Each structure stands twice: as structure tokens, then as C-alpha cells.
Image (cartoon, rainbow, N blue to C red):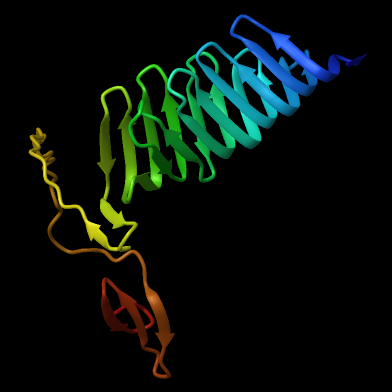
Length: 238
């Protein structure tokens, strides 16, 4: 490749390979801004870490925070299960392995030899430590011939458990019939005691402090609105 150094930055071109304590980073082009501690990567960017792999067209990597912001054809793969997520934009935290997608991504959850589950949402996070995928806003979950819809969803792969929140609807792909999924759950909530602050209210005559719609008649009387009523008085206030 080609190495260039100018001002307070360095640039590599060609088959760029960067090794650090977490894993290996591949790219076609890299530029390191030393003062900011920021690494820019372009072209077939590939983060190969022990438990996950993140690929993208371009990445901005903050070295001190170990967080990468990725653009383009962003793809996340959980190496142990083969679960994948794709989208045009995302954030990858190399400290925790958590990756967050936005801009309408799609995830493909694999559960051994069982059926594949696809998740569509406005955004979602993957948490490899708990095996959870948290999807938010206009969630569609496709499994076999059934689609579940909800405002948000929590998928726990290790426990084979799915939690849906908001209004839940089921779409049958064969008949295209949409039905609401009724559900109920026992809930016990502790209600705090109502706050009540007694306050003395003045009684007696009230002095108006503002007049609206002031109009002067030809005979010198004045009409105006105050305290939700219309009042008529002389010019001297009588």
C-alpha cells in the first residue's frame, strides 16, 4: 500500500490491516487524525473481533471511546449463532459488543435448526452478552407464515422468549388477514398518596389589574372587558 504523513495525520492505502487489543480491522483506505484520536476508514471496512464481525462502506472510529459509527451497507454478524443485522447506518461499541442500527434496519435471528425469524423496525440494538435484540417503532416480526406487529419488541434468543409492547397485531401472509392479539396481565402497582397543599384564598373585593377592548363613546363613557365581563364607566372611573 501507500503511506503518507502530513501535518498531524497519517494515511494508508491498499490492503490496510490494523491490529489492536480487541481484534483486527481491514479496509482499503485509512486516515488517522492523531490530535483527535479518530480513525477514518473507507472501502470494504471489516471489524473482526472475537465474538462479532461488523462490515461497512465507511467508518469513523473514536479510539479513546472504542466506538465506531458506520455508513453504507452496514452488516453485523454474531459469530456464535450466525444472527445477522443489516442497515444503512449504525454504531458499534467494541467495549460491550453492542451495535445499534437506525434508519429502518432488518435483523435475521437464527435459532439452531429452527425457523428463521426476521425483525424489521425503525431501529434496534443487539446485546450479545444477554442474547437480546431490542426493536423500537413500527416493529414487524416475520416467522414462517405469520407476522407479528407491535410498537416495540424484546427478543431473548437464549431463553427463546419474545416480548411485544404496544398494540399487537397479527398478519397472516397466506390470507393477508390482520387481527388484533388480545392479552391481559395481572399488574400490581403501588400508588403514592395524593399530594395536597392547603392554600388560603383571599375573600372580599377584587381589584382588576387589566382592561381589554377599551372603547370610548361619544358621551364620554368608557366600555371595556375585565374579569370576564363588560363594564361601562365614565372617563374619570365612576
